[in-house]
Image (spheres, rainbow, N blue to C red):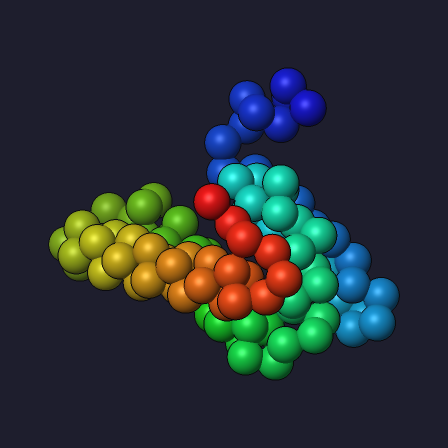
Length: 101
């Protein structure tokens, strides 16, 4: 557990057997991993939003390492999109049987 804390941005990949896929869960959400997995399997809207979140997260990481003239603007753009999607995902989870603080 201590080793995971020393690796910021670490992603945990969880197999969702019923869907025959691997679900990536950023380390900061490991405490609610089971809730994310459950909602991901059961809710199409959550699943689509979560997939968008992962795509934007990947794009954000790309722009962080890019040195082009467009990179600073893209970093800001994707960081804002990620924040919006994180908020939306937390609202979806809170609308269920659990409350996330």
